[in-house]
Length: 114
Image (tube, rainbow, N blue to C red):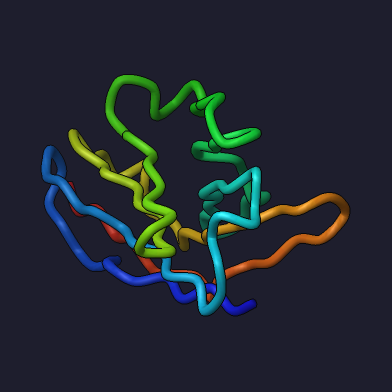
């Protein structure tokens, strides 16, 4: 399975972006999907996840601003981001997990200017 992330770009503070991640195979086969991000000089961190198909978690820094969703019929995972700040600048990675298997997308750059 390959994951293809898209939708990144440059946006001004306060703006919005929607990231998409498309799986080459069935997204439905992955109970857990997530978005992570990695800013320059920082460790990769969890942004949001959907666990066992229904439990949604958000990182503290994005709660109330980001929404994660999945559409298994389209094999896609989305991350709607709003009220963006420069601190959201990072490479965003989609992730899909099934048991001990993990798959990563190639990353998409999000840059928020002040």
